[in-house]
Image (cartoon, rainbow, N blue to C red; front, side, top):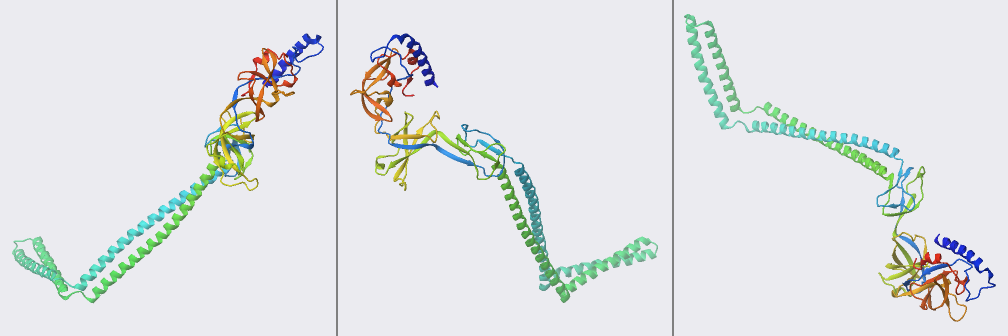
Length: 473
């Protein structure tokens, strides 16, 4: 430490000078002697002058998060140590994922199987729908045929049929005449056997066409028989039964599809759960900050809900000050507050005034935020605080540097390697420091430790002056 090194140098200098001064019987206040004990010299600077530091609190990270595992397993790796800076989403630790990966693979296979079953069920529904369309067409055709039979033949159809009979009769008469002529020629030897046979065949066909036309006309004139109507009605019923079967098949297909859909959704949920469990095996930081605590190590069994790390933002700290409720009205948001730690003073800002009184203490918490860019103030340290009424500055010296054996207090200035007794006038005590009203000015070098062992004019060593610290440090 710097102070220890200074002390060693001073002690060595004291030993050397003690040999030179050994002839002196005793040291008086005005004699030139070497300090018998190490001293510390500081340079005076102006410091903020605040009210009495009558409040105390414990420093906390401005934003702190307790990070816990959300899955069970053996810790494979811890990626950070206490004091490491992390970003939001930085990996803090990893669990062994072999079990979770196996669960994910099984869930994926089950999901794919369920998906195939759902596709098959959808195909069955579509096939059943096509069957419904086909059965409906058959019903429509059977009903149309039955309707035609019930309505009987139309006049136009009868006329067409009569014309067909007339045409068939004319064709028959012609073929009959042709066959007779060909027969005569054949008997006379003027026509061949083949020509005679063809003429007879054409006559037979013409006779058949005439009979068919006559029968069709007869049917039209007579109307549909009872048997035909019964057959047509039976056809309608059969078509309707086919339609009902097709509709039942569709309903069954829809039920199978719904079941397949539910199976697929269950499998998908299981897959997503397994995927989430696999992701939870990697522990990440929810905020940016510094690792304040590490409670796990590699190879240890981690369990869901068990705290593993504490991460906090300590570039900005906060402290809760217990303000008496009788004084709370004088505190305002954004008000400046002097925060003191080991004689160092920083300016904080009131960020929140709590709305209720502490039931145990009767005080009201005031939250103060203060910068900590060098991260040299730590969560858990106890500070003292005072509301800053003004920002006036004054010379402040440690109480231990002021000697008051008579009416006028004094200190020792360090001037050219000697301790010079200097009378001062002091004001109030602030944070274990006297306010100097007169006798000193900024830039003076004073003895802040070991002053009680000095006499006016004692040598304190040039190397001490050369290594002196400013009182603001």
